[in-house]
Image (tube, rainbow, N blue to C red; front, side):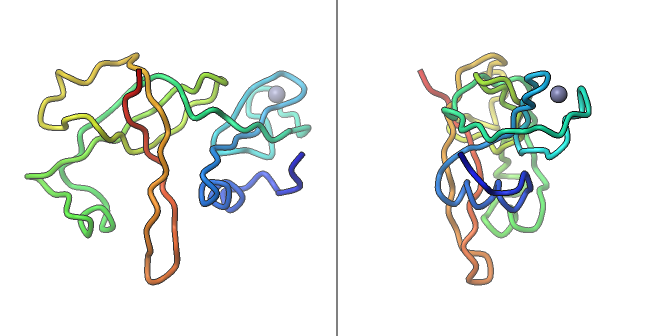
Length: 139
Ligand SMILES: [Zn+2]
């Protein structure tokens, strides 16, 4: 379906198009997001692109008060923490992403297993457009 290499660059290009893509191992069925050219489970190299629905459930999260410079530039700091988490996709892979639509000052309200839906954050970094993956709660 897709001729692009299974690389972070391809992954980011797909994000730019608002598509969350991963690679599935045709030998053992393992699924990776971001994509990997080599299966870490069976060491197979026969991979195929799979487009996800961008839905899954929250499997881990942390509230971050001191983030990397680009997050500080967006206005996040000790008084305005943000949430970073891991979402287990319905297709099987696990992806790290920013979690929006939850209150980092009230972590008790954030439940593991809650349903999440992907959203794509577009912004410019030194005039170069970049897209970041985030998730927010969904029904
Ligand atoms: Zn495999």
